[in-house]
Structures are given as structure tokens and as C-alpha cells.
Amino acid sequence: MSNWDPTLSLQAWRELLVDAGWAVPSWSRQCFGRDLPAWADQVVADEIRLIGAVGQPLGSGMSLAAPTIVEHGSDELRHLILRPTLTGEKTWCQLFSEPGAGSDLAGLSTSAVLDGDEWVINGQKVWNTSAHHADYGMLVARTSWDVPKHHGVSYFILPMHQPGIEVRGIKQMNRHASFNEVFLTDARIPANHLVGTLNDGWRVARATLAHERTFSTMRRPKFVESAGKQSRAVSEAEAEAEEHFKTYVWYPQRAGRVDLVIERAQQHGVAHDLVIRQEIAALISFQRTSEWTALRARAARALGRPPGPEGSLGKLAASQVARMAHRVHTLISGANGMLTTGDHPHDATIAEVLVSTPAQSIAGGTDEIQKSIIGEKILGLARESDPSLDLPYREVARRSQ
Image 1 (cartoon, rainbow, N blue to C red):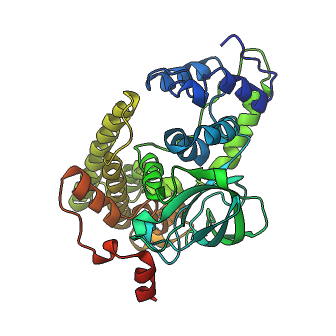
Image 2: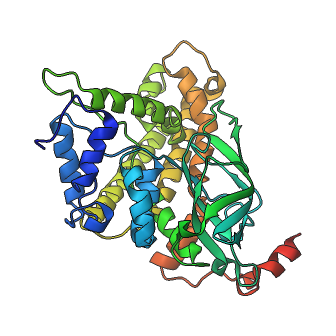
């Protein structure tokens, strides 16, 4: 890492890192990597941090979009999109969910129609984090209505800064506003921004979802200042992280804040209540068990194995932890758990927990979807019967209307 120069801008440093292949060294050289084993990514990231340098950008561009493009994108698309994503020059949002589809992602109705060398997009998306400032969107849209729904979907990279795209913020019941709804009216996508092949977007979208459901915790990076030097890149990275994590400030509450249950039980004088003690023990035991499962999944990823249905186990476990924590905090605080102010530290935090935890079992695929994936992919159960799966989606949509 002799090229590390603390006086460089964050953009300039990341460009050096990417061009040298050290941003994601396990990727191929064609994808700005070094063809190293998967475990090298964490080793290199640790070394970069130890010398006081800065690593990858934060956000869905690196965690979702870039890995999907590496796996399914054309060489032209990789060359065009990966570098500005790796340097943080371009930011991303995910445009999957629709208000009329619910958990049935393949039941989407946003349409993409080819017009010369561009796709014309019309429809609506919802629950889109960072859509109000993203440069690109991971978009799934219907390109054929005359085949079953899973076979008529394509995956695109949507340039967000153009006419025909309207982004509106959504106010949540916990008073945060982390999500948006996006309205698409004759928005346009270059023909070469198709990821994978036409009408094969369901397979590509599943790859993105598999990365989304991997066992990972959203942690704020820790920066180490270079000894005796004022680092411009580190200062800019800290500002980048500050802005990025504003969106996710309530996510610890969504997960249930298990870390607070013992302290809260002691503060409220119920630490010796036998029922509450049993509930706390069950909660912490389940959480630690799910953490061990997460460690096994991360070890598999370090060995180069692609994310698979085990991500659904982690997602389902996280939902259960949140529900159990909700119950324990309610037992401890009683009606006071609804107050946004109080005499004890974290009183307002608990009120936020109680209105945030329901989101854990919805975001990233509902519990019902995860159970279906586990049943089919892990337990080998037969697929749930659905006659509409064999019908042209045009006919299914007409019947639903």
C-alpha cells in the first residue's frame, strides 16, 4: 500500500485502488479485480484500514448492484458501470417492489417497451431507499405479457436523473422517512443497459436478492487517521458515512435492540420476575444461535461460495429476534413503552422499537416468502400450487382486475 497518500481526495484514492485491482481483489481482472480467492477481499480490506486508508464505497451499489453486474452483466456493461460504482462516483437504489404486487415480485406491472435503441419505462415502484439522490436504479420491469409472469421480466440499469422520473418521500409510523415511491412516465433506458438476457430478469433479480439476504450487519466503518498527517480522503469518507447512515439510524430499533433488555429489566425493577427472566433467556439464546448460523454463512462466502437459500434462514431468524424483543420490551416497560419521553435512558428508544420491529419481517422479502424458499430450496418440498404460474401474465392481470 505504498501508493497511499493521505492528501489525495477520496475520489482520487479510490480510482487508484480500483485501477490497481485492490478494491475487490477476488473479482476478475476484467471486472477491476485481481483473480484472487474470495477470502482475499476481507484480508485486503483489513490491511487498508490498518494503514489508515479508505476502502469501498457504502451503499447498495457495492453490496447489490456491482456483484449482480459481475455475475450477469455483459462485458460492455461491466466496463461502463463497474468502475464509477467502485469509486463511489455513482450511487444506486433498488426499484423492485410495486404497490400492486406486494410480496409477489414477479407479479410486477411496470412495463418496458423497446423503442429503437432505448427502452421506454412506465409504472410505479415503492419502498425505494436513496431513490431521491441515486444516479442509477436496479430496475425489474415486464417485457412480455404473453408468457407466465416469471418468464416475462427483464432486469435493467435505469439512469435516475432524467425527465419522467418523479420521486416522493414516504413518512413512516416511527416518524422517519427512509423510503420513497418512484413514478416512471416514459422514462428511457439505453438498450445496452439490459442485465442478462431479455425476459430472464427473474434469475438476475434473484441473484440481487440473494446478496441482499446474506448474513451481514450494517456497521459504520471505523477510520484510522494516518499518523501525523491530515487525511483528506478519510475526512471525506467520514462525511460520506455520516450522510449514508442517516437513512439507517432507526435500523437498530427495527432489529429489536436486544442489547438493552437486561439493562431495562434492571432499571424497571423486574429483573427477578421469573416470567420476564425466562423470556429474556429465550431471546438472547435465540439471537446467539442465529449469530452462529450467520458466521457459518460468512465463512462459506469467504470460501467463494455464492449466496444461497441460507440467506432466507438468516432473514427469517432476524424477524423472529425482532418479534421476541418486541415482546420482552413490552413485558418490561408495560404501557410506558408507548411514551416517547421518560425518566430512564432509552425510554424514547423503546417506543421507537415497538413501532419499528414490524418492518423487519416485511423488508427484503416477507417471512412467508422466506419460508417458501426454505421449504423448496433447503427441505426439498414441492412448490406451492399456483395455476396462474402456467398462464400468460396478460390473462392473470386481466382476471385480477
